Length: 408
Image (cartoon, rainbow, N blue to C red; front, side, top):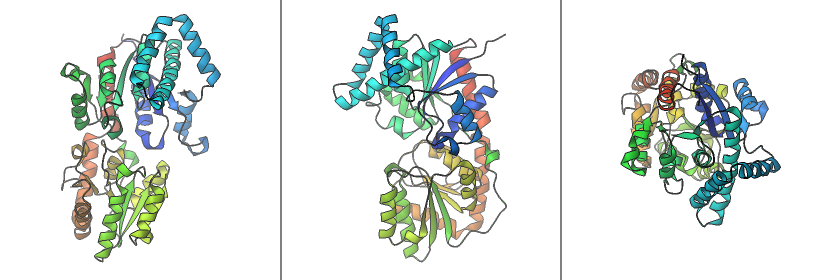
């Protein structure tokens, strides 16, 4: 009988409200028979009282690196050096090489090294020999240089691909058994970052959602003014400034719309000021972060979902809105055209082009029946290609293939 596949999933922050798909995937892998332990670099992004019951359950079984007292970190490093001095020094030398001469990068990488020692010792304690990383691949890579373990990692979007030199992408790929990209576009970018001899390591396995949690409500007439929804971190790369300009342009034409911005981030104050400058402050609501139950209600209240981003992977929020039968307007970039076929199950616009974005919103306003049709086809697309259970089974098959049916 085949043994259970075991691995440690190292995650940058777990649980996190904008990475709920990782929690869903971990729990589904366990239902499929995998033994998945979780280590998180950072503690949860919310206090315990704001976590869901499932999140609190995961917190109780997760090993948090940054919560480890500094005295224990130092003691662990001394112990590892005394026990395995050659491996320890080899890993430290490798880490210093990654950091280069700049003091700030050196400080960060020494912190990564300390975290890697904690991860490796936890893997030794639990007799796990494979490490899969999400948003923490540098720590995983260093771990493999200090301990006799293997690694793999996932690539989710812009943050991991836009600067392959400083993120050591080629080194990560070289050190990994495999690399999972959630989009075909992302896999292509990974191919550019490494030698062709490594391409077989690069595998496209999409994410997904549980569409049963995002059931559409009964049909209703489009609101007046049109209610737009945008969900995401308030940051320059998310492009909310472009959406505000499009809203202002529509208002100038006598076609007022109301937009809700769900999320928070460094751009919030600037965006609030910009909305006032454009004369649309009363047409823009800054909602902040919301929990899953509230988010579903916000989706239901919207007429159209708009994603104005300048850079993305394949956003989960698009899948969620599409599952709610909301017509979505998104930029024609990266992996988004893999999710949305223009004019069939959503609308695409030229990235950064406010006029093209405005035209897309106008098309929805002009054709309510077409709006409903696009929404229905959007849900069908998610059910067909982005079902969480089915795509997690694809990831499970990849893990079995690359790790083998033996304890890892």
